[in-house]
Length: 162
Ligand code: PNS
Image 1 (spheres, rainbow, N blue to C red):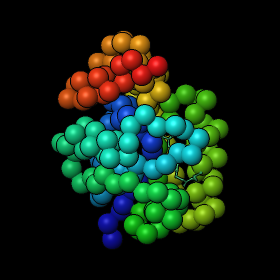
Image 2: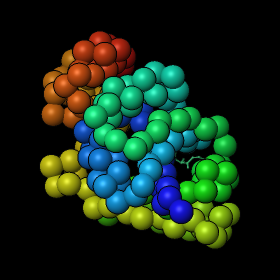
Image 3: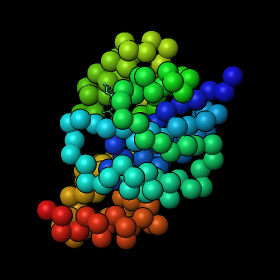
Image 4: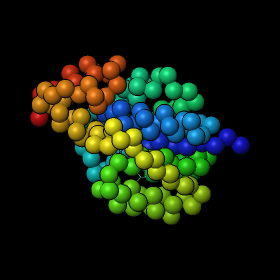
């Protein structure tokens, strides 16, 4: 049976850190579903469709992945898709508490589902979508944060958005 993993997130917008985690997850599983989900505690800057389009461009050369959106519980979506694992990147200690809580909640809702944390690559340790948004909104350079092919789209969309 094919081993399917889900890389869930807000991806608002996708960063080089996300692409790194998706690339590494794709080497570990037969198929990776990149799921754009709603995080009720965040107010998004990009629509779901925009986030999907950006993700598709950013991951165009990664094989055996699928980009989807789902408005509901990750644990239910994983069950529906027969996914065996959720793969998330872990950057700094401050990520841990929230991620640990989500992993345990998902395990309670779907006991078959494992959560795997990949240690972030050192060069992306500081990177987050929120930082991209903040830097671009003040007109700063985000070339080390997002894929080259998306620079203009993300920058032009966020610049002045303060
Ligand atoms: O990139 P983010 O914002 O850290 O990702 C969080 C996300 C979207 C994966 C999380 O909020 C989520 O799984 N949302 C779907 C709703 C859900 O299942 N909530 C319960 C998980 S504890």
